[in-house]
Image 1: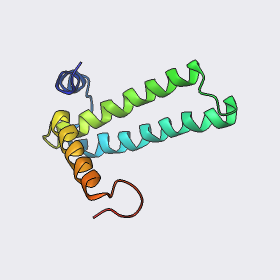
Image 2: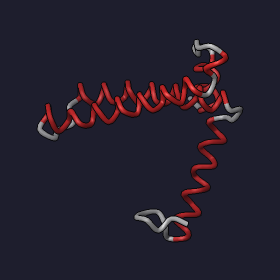
Image 3: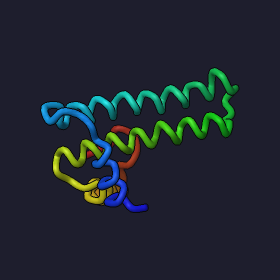
Length: 107
């Protein structure tokens, strides 16, 4: 599946008021990213640092929710996930070329 297909499919399941456009998916994205972090935390707390298949499945589920909210937010601001991904790779390539991929060396 590609990003455009996913984004179009996700849009069909977006059920929130027009007045909540941008705000709803931005808040949902934040919350779901927290859920991903919570599952990773549980690897340490509950699984002695081991990524179990059950935990992996839960992380994948939460990442799917992150992707849905990212797609909804991108749609709400009028951009495709393909363009978001391309811009991100371009930014990272520039940082790699500048030697600023890590630390506080960003320009």
